[in-house]
Amino acid sequence: MGKKFVIVGSGSSYTPAIVDVLLHRKDDLGLEEVSLYDIDAQRAERTGAYCKLYAAENFSDVKVGYTTDIEEAFTGADFLFVQIRPGLNKQRETDEKICLKHGVLGQETCGLGGMSFALRCIPAILEIVGKAQEICPDAWILNYSNPEAMISEAIYRTYPNAKALCICDMPISQEETVAEFMDIPLEELNFKYFGLNHFGWFTGIYDRSGRDLMPALREKILADESLHMVNAENAANGDTYWAEMYDHVLEGFRAYPEYLPLCYIAYYYFNKEIVEGMDPNYTRGSYVLDVREKRVFDECERCLAAGTTADSSIHSGVHGNYIVDIANAIINNTHERFVVNVMNKGAIGNFNHDAVVEVPVYVDAAGIEPVAVGYIPQFHKGLMEGQKAYEKLAVEAALEGSYQKAIQAVLLNRTIPSYAVGKAVLDELMEANKDWWPELK
Ligand code: G6P
Ligand code: MN
Image (cartoon, rainbow, N blue to C red; front, side, top):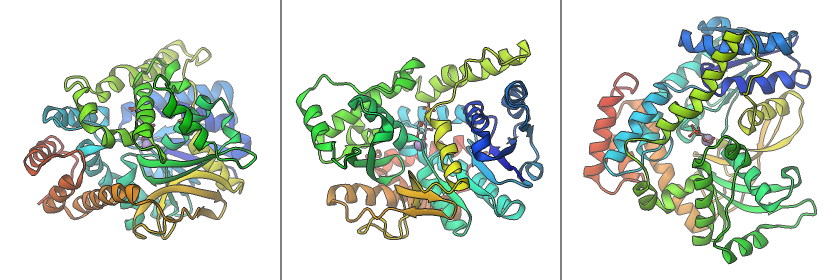
């Protein structure tokens, strides 16, 4: 029997590229069917009809369908790719603007924008994982939904035995960018890494001969202030946001040259300066709505109106490849290495064993084998402990409906300067999100 893949939250602009990768790799994956599931019929139809047409024109032996019926979608599934966004990018934008109006970071996963997103997403994701345990308990759940740091805590805590793996494409995107910067093919490099989701560091970059290139990279970056790191894929799309983020990677490395920070670390190292440079009237969410999402959705509609996807400009990139690579490692028992979010259980020896961490793991048919990172330095450990305490309290606030835990999480978040500011932001976010958040009492 061939494999059935389900995309949960298939109305997303990321779907056509993921489906493209699945179809191109259908033989490796033994792919028989792709079911595109979304709770929003209109959104399910737009990307669904596009993917169906694309498959019919190019890979007619694979069945592609779309539905708003969870039973139909999950029945017989082997893999669920979960990428939901309750409130859509519109609510992301609203949250970002509320935060920035109060002078604090407005961002979808970091700062209180991330906490708000977690409160929207956790109830929905737990319902989905619960349904999967009933309908397709043997299916692997690969979660891409954000904010992954807190979603992974909620999933692993609530369903410790589920076949769920929580992933993020940022480490691999940054590895790709660093490889380009060093002008060495990514396949020839092995990155050492530890942290939390959107809160980590690369500690070593080993070449095929086993030599660590990090010291040479450090020397180069410290010696030349004019260097830039550019992600070719994003640059090709005219998206300058990531170029700025990668400039912060260099800046962060110069400030604390022990390990190369993941770009999201900039929101903490350089919080004040970055917030001052953000426009409270036009956020990243505004750009995604106006440009990135619109480009994909317009292209779906244009192809559907033309009756062909032959000249489609939608291409797959690292995001689609990464999730399919992990599924492939499970199906074909490849024992490949990926950076994912797992329960620590000693992987980082001197960090809370009951906390989700982001570390390299080997993936095969039996599941995952995390790499033992060892002991981490006090500086990184201290930053991570504060962040983890915030994440855990935010998750508990969502699970227990506790305002007290929410306000504690707020003060633990490094982007919040005081109780008064934090409470004002939390209360305004709560009001703006009352359709999604659990009630906090
Ligand atoms: C990276 C992160 C994702 C995040 C995305 C935001 O890929 O790993 O977690 O969702 O960036 O991109 P956007 O274009 O929506 O700002
Ligand atoms: Mn991510």
